[in-house]
Structures are given as structure tokens and as C-alpha cells.
Amino acid sequence: MNILEFKNRKTGDKSERVRKLSLITCYDYTSACLASQTSIDALLVGDSLAMTMYGHSSTLPATLELMAAHTAAVVRGAGDKMVIADLPFLSFRKSLSDNVNAVALLMQAGAHAVKLEGAAGNCELVQHLVQSGVPVMGHLGLTPQSVNQLGGYKVQGREASAAQAITKAALDLEAAGCFSVVLECVPSALAREITANLMIPTIGIGAGPDTDGQILVWQDLLGLNTDFTPKFVRTYANGADVIRAAIDSYVHDVREQTFPSPKESYE
Ligand code: KIV
Image (cartoon, rainbow, N blue to C red; front, top):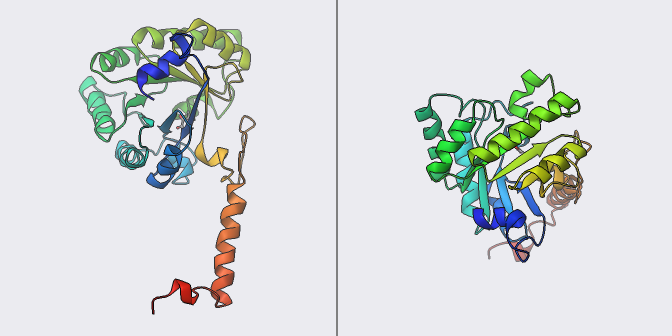
């Protein structure tokens, strides 16, 4: 899928508006190879990797260099899947030239688009990037890079004024040229209204059923998280049990001396 096909899922002719968009986060080469063999529409190298891959308690420790390295690894395995890379904390809040250099690093790592959080103070940059040939995805609602400002990981836009602010931010990002907007942890009714008011696809995570697409974090979808599962997650496999059982079987076979067998040994 390319950027035009992505947008056409919402505004293309009837034959292109065939199905909702399905996205998943992806952080490494092996996972990208697996994802490339599925019907997933696009992969996001999310800055959530700071938490899922490195064990941090927020996304703030994700650096540009880390994002570029993981993006390059994902791109190598992604085949023809579209890869979107997150601009990490503060990397796009500097001078225009520093911001452009940050974006260049991710695009030259092979990303097909970048994602940035928030609208206030970002629209000029979005416009500049789009005019420079870089597709940009927005991200509103619960924006994890602002967790310290938001006072925690909470549903956003419950009050009328907050809902209005998110709606306006979505319209501003669309006007600036974003090709899509992620809506994270907002009430379903707000996501529905924003989706109806935008020409670009909305991608929901904890935003109810009426967005133009959905995204889930790799570890959440596959049941690899052993500590906390947010309310909005549906787990499609018990990956943790499968992996633990496989490792225990291996340990058992080594201890029982049934591995390696002659078949698995060189004469
Ligand atoms: O970093 C991430 O995983 C994200 C998704 C939650 C949308 O931004």
C-alpha cells in the first residue's frame, strides 16, 4: 500500500473504499518479515519501542538514533508494506533545520512517512515537510510524549472544551497536509465526530469502532505483555504462553538429553 491508496480508503472511488485500515506497530526485522506475510495495511515503528522493547516506563527515552535504527531494521523485513516512523520526544520541536534533519534521518532509514504528536506549534512544520515530499501522520488525544503535561495515561477529550480542542487540532493537521491522524484514547463519540469531519483517514487506538482504521501495539495484539493490558486492547494470541512453553520444552529436552538427536547432529 502507498500513501495514495491509504488516503483512498476514505475518499477514493467506491472500489477503493473497500475496507477499514488495519495497522500494527513493529520494531524489528523478524517481526517485519512476519507482518509482510499478512494482510496488514501498514506498519508503525512507534516510539512505544522505548517501553515495549527497552522496558522504559514512558516513550520519552526513545531517541532519534534508536528510531532510525529500528526503522531501518523494519524496512528490511517489511517487503511492500508501508512503514511509518515516529518522530520521538522533542526531536521535531527545535529549529526548522534540526527538525528537517530529524525527518531526513528517518526517511533515509527507509520510512515512507513520519508521525508526530500534537498540532499546536507543529502545523508549519507539517506544511514544510509535505511540500518537501514527506507524508506526515498526526497523532491526537492521548499523546504519550506529553504524559507529564497530561498527568498520566488518561482518556482525553471527555469535557466539551477538550473535545473541541482535539477536533480543531485534527482540522488544523488536515489543513496543514497530514495524510492521516491517529486518535488515541478518546471517547468513541468524539472519534466518530472527528472522523466524519475529516477527509483524511483517522486511525483509532482506544477510540471506538467508528474511526477509518485501527492500530494496535504488536505485543498487545499477540499477548506478549505479561503485566498490563489496557481496556481497549483485544489480544489475538496467547504469545506469552506459547513462548514460555517452547522455552520450557527446550530446557526439558536438554536436561533429558533428547536434544540434540542424531538427526540434529553432524556425523
Ligand atoms: O508509538 C506508538 O506505538 C504509537 C501508537 C500507539 C499509535 O504511537
